[in-house]
Length: 347
Image 1: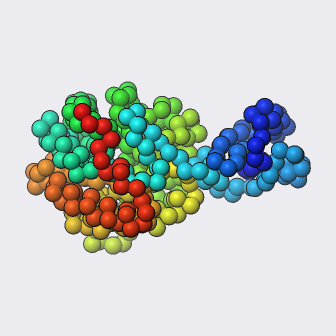
Image 2: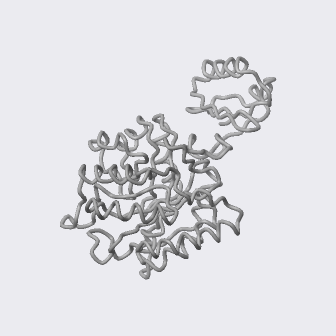
Image 3: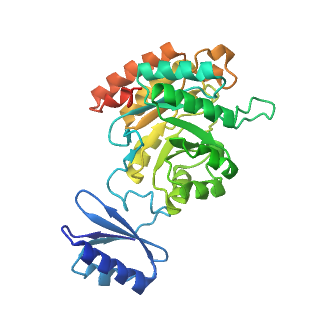
């Protein structure tokens, strides 16, 4: 249940009303302060809540029952878009398009720094790179682990780009303390112990949709993180498994406007994993921006033919530069900001 309060209510009146609701109905209260109103979300068993009694309170403008099982991720509870601000001041979800790019897997100092410098020059503002790699085959390259994170930090120091990398288990979290954004991969979208642990730290989390999960299940996974205290969550559509065999996965472009309607959280698209084909990344990226995506996360490698992971779907730096140029055109056409394509920090 959500309660919309009348405008211009004092903080003391709001707190007094909150205490009344908590004591009378034994519910938790989530407060969202928007540009035009204050919204109270009642969390818990609201079956006994008397709507007419609440509606009669002088402070109340409107009362609505919410059927969706996710509350904190629900736009009804939080009408304004969530804007996540990184430590370097870069904003995600403010209406502009954020570009994340880098190799699927960190392989060497030379490789990751060369790619970082190239994608920064083209317009990426965050560097991606896998240190721990979940692979279908146990014999495939599993990543450099902690050493890979060290190389990402080195690339950050040289370029100023914030870094994002994927965590695989709760036991690895201490290694990610100074990683700017922690990624949860598709295979771990419903690793609920990991999601709870991520909720107890304050680093932003990019949560990828599982390859066979519904939109509601994605939002419920975000709810696990948010209900444990961390509301800095970015949703990421990376393609789902269908009967189609022409692409690695099928990009659900409709997920962008649906998620934007249902939730206040930023929404990203991963066209690299959706397509699995380099030449498809560009049109899918353009479509994502036109559909309203807040950002893109794209795989770029300086030598895809020799990549230890997902080289067949990685772009070269020149190909990424072309993608950025065309994404800028689409962004301008739909009146989106393009300033985020510039490096947020110059070292």
